[in-house]
Length: 63
Image (tube, rainbow, N blue to C red; front, side, top):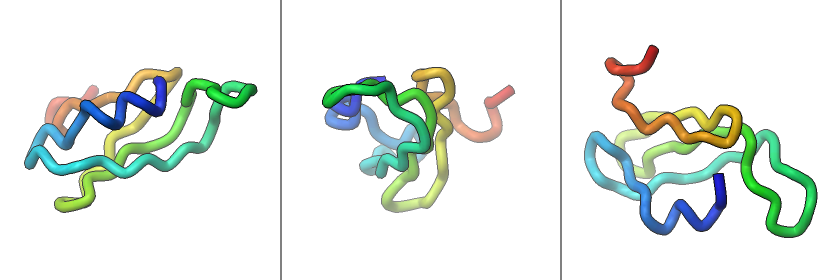
């Protein structure tokens, strides 16, 4: 996932901004995010980033 994606994604539950927490990133200055979480700044719901793909499904629809 490119960090610039944060400019266009929002929490699917309440449409507020998401805060990024990176746990793994590709090497290089503009390395894509491989793993981490996106957390809603309002409701606090978290969305995982796995293998570079953010899972923005509501919690009850995951897995």
